[in-house]
Image (tube, rainbow, N blue to C red; front, side):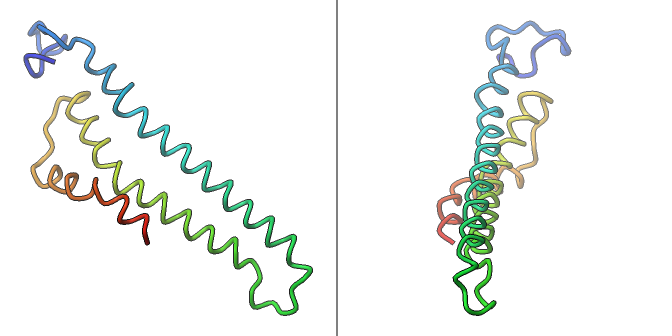
Length: 127
Protein backbone atom coordinates (compact mmCIF):
# COMPACT_ATOMS: atom_id res chain seq x y z
CA UNK A 1 0.00 0.00 0.00
CA UNK A 2 1.11 3.54 -0.57
CA UNK A 3 2.01 5.40 1.56
CA UNK A 4 3.46 2.66 3.74
CA UNK A 5 1.35 2.07 6.83
CA UNK A 6 -1.77 3.69 5.45
CA UNK A 7 -5.19 2.36 6.28
CA UNK A 8 -7.91 2.55 8.87
CA UNK A 9 -5.59 2.23 11.89
CA UNK A 10 -3.19 5.02 10.93
CA UNK A 11 -5.74 7.54 9.76
CA UNK A 12 -3.82 8.13 6.52
CA UNK A 13 -5.78 7.44 3.34
CA UNK A 14 -4.28 4.91 0.95
CA UNK A 15 -3.56 6.19 -2.53
CA UNK A 16 -3.26 2.66 -3.88
CA UNK A 17 -3.05 -0.86 -2.52
CA UNK A 18 -6.10 -0.78 -0.28
CA UNK A 19 -6.43 -4.57 -0.53
CA UNK A 20 -2.81 -5.39 0.25
CA UNK A 21 -3.74 -7.58 3.24
CA UNK A 22 -6.13 -9.64 1.14
CA UNK A 23 -3.60 -10.03 -1.66
CA UNK A 24 -0.85 -10.95 0.78
CA UNK A 25 -2.99 -13.70 2.25
CA UNK A 26 -4.33 -14.96 -1.10
CA UNK A 27 -1.13 -14.84 -3.14
CA UNK A 28 1.59 -15.00 -0.50
CA UNK A 29 0.53 -16.99 2.53
CA UNK A 30 -2.21 -19.25 1.16
CA UNK A 31 0.04 -20.90 -1.47
CA UNK A 32 2.66 -21.62 1.19
CA UNK A 33 0.15 -23.22 3.55
CA UNK A 34 -1.55 -25.14 0.72
CA UNK A 35 1.87 -26.38 -0.40
CA UNK A 36 2.63 -27.48 3.14
CA UNK A 37 -0.72 -29.27 3.36
CA UNK A 38 -0.21 -31.11 0.06
CA UNK A 39 3.37 -32.02 0.91
CA UNK A 40 2.32 -33.52 4.24
CA UNK A 41 -0.54 -35.45 2.60
CA UNK A 42 1.75 -36.69 -0.21
CA UNK A 43 4.49 -37.77 2.16
CA UNK A 44 1.95 -39.55 4.38
CA UNK A 45 0.60 -41.45 1.38
CA UNK A 46 4.11 -42.40 0.28
CA UNK A 47 4.92 -43.66 3.78
CA UNK A 48 1.68 -45.65 3.93
CA UNK A 49 2.42 -47.18 0.52
CA UNK A 50 5.87 -48.29 1.66
CA UNK A 51 4.45 -49.64 4.91
CA UNK A 52 1.74 -51.61 3.10
CA UNK A 53 4.32 -53.02 0.71
CA UNK A 54 6.54 -54.01 3.65
CA UNK A 55 3.62 -55.75 5.30
CA UNK A 56 2.73 -57.59 2.09
CA UNK A 57 6.33 -58.76 1.62
CA UNK A 58 6.85 -59.74 5.26
CA UNK A 59 5.67 -63.31 4.65
CA UNK A 60 8.52 -63.84 2.18
CA UNK A 61 11.26 -62.73 4.58
CA UNK A 62 13.54 -65.30 6.13
CA UNK A 63 15.05 -63.13 8.87
CA UNK A 64 13.76 -60.23 10.91
CA UNK A 65 16.68 -57.87 10.21
CA UNK A 66 15.07 -56.14 7.19
CA UNK A 67 11.57 -55.78 8.60
CA UNK A 68 9.87 -52.51 7.63
CA UNK A 69 12.99 -51.25 5.85
CA UNK A 70 11.09 -49.53 3.03
CA UNK A 71 8.65 -47.80 5.33
CA UNK A 72 11.46 -46.56 7.58
CA UNK A 73 13.35 -45.19 4.58
CA UNK A 74 10.20 -43.58 3.19
CA UNK A 75 9.45 -41.99 6.57
CA UNK A 76 12.98 -40.63 6.83
CA UNK A 77 12.87 -39.12 3.33
CA UNK A 78 9.39 -37.68 3.91
CA UNK A 79 10.59 -35.95 7.07
CA UNK A 80 13.59 -34.55 5.20
CA UNK A 81 11.42 -33.15 2.38
CA UNK A 82 9.00 -31.52 4.84
CA UNK A 83 11.93 -30.07 6.80
CA UNK A 84 13.43 -28.65 3.58
CA UNK A 85 10.09 -27.02 2.80
CA UNK A 86 9.92 -25.53 6.29
CA UNK A 87 13.46 -24.17 6.10
CA UNK A 88 12.85 -22.59 2.70
CA UNK A 89 9.30 -21.23 3.05
CA UNK A 90 8.51 -20.50 6.70
CA UNK A 91 10.84 -17.46 6.99
CA UNK A 92 9.27 -15.74 3.94
CA UNK A 93 5.78 -16.51 5.29
CA UNK A 94 6.66 -14.94 8.63
CA UNK A 95 8.12 -11.91 6.86
CA UNK A 96 5.02 -11.47 4.70
CA UNK A 97 2.70 -11.77 7.68
CA UNK A 98 4.60 -9.35 9.87
CA UNK A 99 5.21 -6.69 7.22
CA UNK A 100 1.90 -6.65 5.36
CA UNK A 101 -0.55 -7.71 8.06
CA UNK A 102 0.98 -6.47 11.32
CA UNK A 103 2.91 -3.58 9.68
CA UNK A 104 6.19 -4.21 11.47
CA UNK A 105 9.63 -4.55 9.96
CA UNK A 106 11.67 -7.58 10.92
CA UNK A 107 15.28 -7.12 11.99
CA UNK A 108 17.97 -7.17 9.34
CA UNK A 109 19.33 -10.48 10.66
CA UNK A 110 15.99 -12.22 10.07
CA UNK A 111 15.76 -10.87 6.53
CA UNK A 112 19.35 -11.97 5.86
CA UNK A 113 18.51 -15.45 7.20
CA UNK A 114 15.50 -15.55 4.89
CA UNK A 115 17.65 -14.63 1.88
CA UNK A 116 20.15 -17.35 2.75
CA UNK A 117 17.66 -20.13 3.49
CA UNK A 118 15.09 -19.60 0.73
CA UNK A 119 17.28 -20.79 -2.19
CA UNK A 120 18.47 -23.83 -0.23
CA UNK A 121 15.36 -25.97 -0.76
CA UNK A 122 16.78 -27.76 -3.80
CA UNK A 123 20.09 -28.31 -2.07
CA UNK A 124 18.36 -29.68 1.04
CA UNK A 125 16.14 -31.98 -1.04
CA UNK A 126 19.28 -33.57 -2.48
CA UNK A 127 20.14 -34.97 0.92
